[in-house]
Length: 305
Image (cartoon, rainbow, N blue to C red; front, side):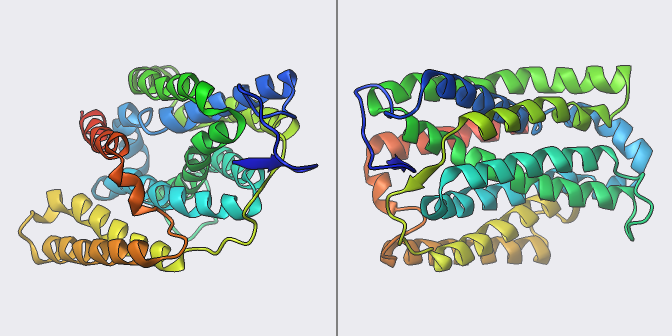
């Protein structure tokens, strides 16, 4: 758990003492809006795909719009969650939310920024990658902040509330993306984030208290970071190129082998690290291990469809 910056942690049976009701309401508003933006942004662009390709060309590179976002957001979650354990939640959450909003504006301007040395599709891929960093920072800290504020007896209902946001986004996102594209432009799918994101950032800035971590002397798991990147990057590249080159191509097979090797290395590093990024002992708990498998299958089904 965390402590309020002015003193030692003091907990009631419901939530962290020192967080007033207005602070709690403002914090929850900001967190919910940030979660909604990050969730919708993974589905809203799909229905705008034909217009984006027609506007920016680069059909052969379009899969990278999604791959760049997923790659950077996946890597950002554990890295910035670990950093927040040392330096506190608020600076990283604010940075992630601001980065997400700023890059949303840049994504909407892709192709119009003629001073950049890359074409419109290249600009969109670059900005989506940066946007994924912001989304990863937001999603990596979202449920951690809930754990900081609420006691175990209350966490369940709020985790359920935030999880429901993803269900709403999976239905509402494609519909909203199609409507915005038809009524205005595919660029509106990105610009719609700006007013909502501004409200979320403002609410978090003024209402979310800065909580100092208790274990300020924690060390970062650099070996875990390196091996995780070595696993995730070639895996996503292989999945992206498999449809173009085939599953049996040397390029795809070599990337899958590389990902498998780094996965083994990651497990070895985490099992020996004094302060692992992902403690493997968590998965001895059947609730955590079974739910992790279910969430993985749910993600495959939802994003695949």
